[in-house]
Every structure is written in C-alpha cells, then in structure tokens.
Image 1 (cartoon, rainbow, N blue to C red):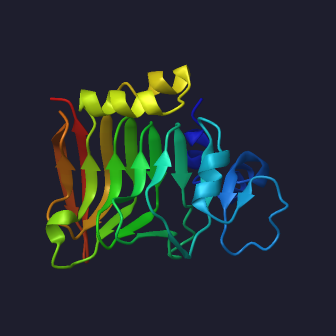
Image 2 (image 1 turned 180 degrees about the vertical axis):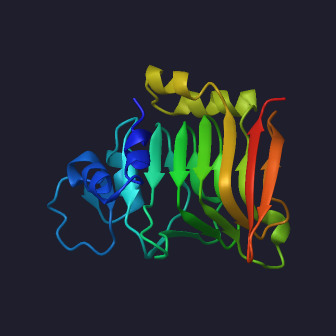
Length: 225
C-alpha cells in the first residue's frame, strides 16, 4: 500500500511533521550522517532503493548533491525531499550516461532537483510515474539533441516484454506497472531540445504552464490517447 499520505500529512503543521517524519516510518538518505548504525539510514540512494520494499517512501535530506547514474527503480517507491522554507533541495547529478533515474515501476518523485549534463533526467520504461514540485535540468551543450528532461519508451511492447523477462519481478509489481503514464505537477523544466521525448505509444496531453517572476512551471500528462 502506498505511503504517500505520510508525505501529505507532514505539510500540515510542525506537530504532524514531527510524527510523519519519525525515523522509524521512513527510509532515509543523508550524506552527512556519521552513524549508519541507525536502522533505515543510508549514505546513498542506490543502497536505499535496494533495501526498500515495494510501497516504501525514501526521505532524502534537504541540501547536498549526489552523483547518480542509471539507478533502476523496479518496485513502487516514493522519493521525497522535504523542504524547510527555502533551503536547497537534494540535487541528483547525471554525467555522461543514459539517465539519472530509470523507472520501471509506479513511482512518485517530490521536491527533487535532477540535473543531467548529457542524457536524460528521467528515463520512463513502464509504470505510472508522478513528479511533483521537482526541477529537471539539462545542461546547455553542443549535443542538446541528446539531452531531454523526460524520455519515455513505455508502450513499446517488445521492449517491455524484454525488460520483464530478464528481471526478477514479483507478480504484485508486474500488476502495478501494466498501466503506463507520466504526470508532471508544478515542475520546472530547463534545457534540452524538448521537454519530453516519447518512442512508445504515449502522447503529451493536458498541458498547463504557469509563469512566475523567474521561471515557468509545467503541469501535463504523458499518457495514451
């Protein structure tokens, strides 16, 4: 069962935030923590994703940077960075590889900044993916056509069958990834030749853009027609 309700209740008030963010209820990634003997605390995202069970929420400490490359998420997870006032978000950097995060299952990403110097920020293979309040950045370079904030290959039946046939995926997880879509909510998209690239049978729908003083914020779905 999804545990996104804990993320939502943490935004109500300080008391609810304390209860919702109790260390025993989350897997935590904190690059600054020295004592890794605490249960559920990890130095990097790969370890947290590997240890997580389907439906878990991974809380990523605010502030800091982490270099990631093709981290595959094959089970339903929620990756959240809780922001206190205007503190910096946790930033994921991808340098010269295909993607920062490769998503093969239903996932939610909230309040994360993902930067890609070459390649894409999010590579969506299958499942229902939601980005809420995120920043997706592609660095400006002569190979802009190779950079894209979101790339989805979902709906390519041959590729999807190949992925499932080579991965040990539980039946419950297989059921969750049969529906493929990407939902983008209040997300900044910067750089790249285009915001979304699709090679499967998904199309861009219901686009809404809001202008602020310094940025454009996007809401849209990538789904079946």
